[in-house]
Image (cartoon, rainbow, N blue to C red; front, side, top):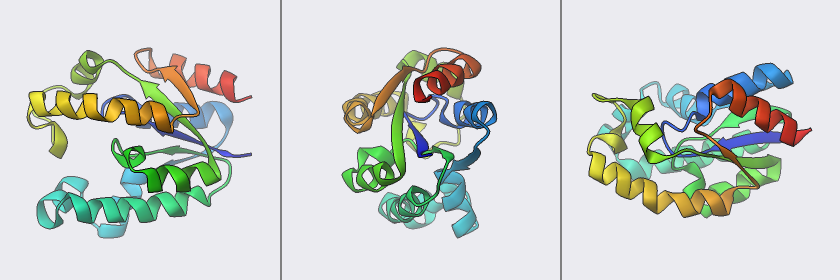
Length: 163
């Protein structure tokens, strides 16, 4: 069986839905952001602050290449991963990409205030980033699912589509 790769904007529910989907389908869950943090031994926010976004994106690309070689997994990607064609190309070698299409308002509710997310410190910049990334998510996706539903309902929808 191929991997199911979940993409979407930060706060779209990739990790929560991915974990739920893994339970439903009896598969291993893998989070690319967690893998980057494990490899570096520090949180992503600290990677951004110490080394910059370009350095982080290189690490992320390596992790995308590695996860594409896994089998039968549910893979949650970072919010920017599939906005880079090279990552999409690698990830598609190992499975199908599912875009969690979540409204910006819902994203804001889920993330809340006082976030530690480096790219969500300024709401106007975050909205601009959302608008910039949205068409890239659509382009990368093999399947698009409504991400505004509960994690359970979203995961059940994806599981039904992938059978």
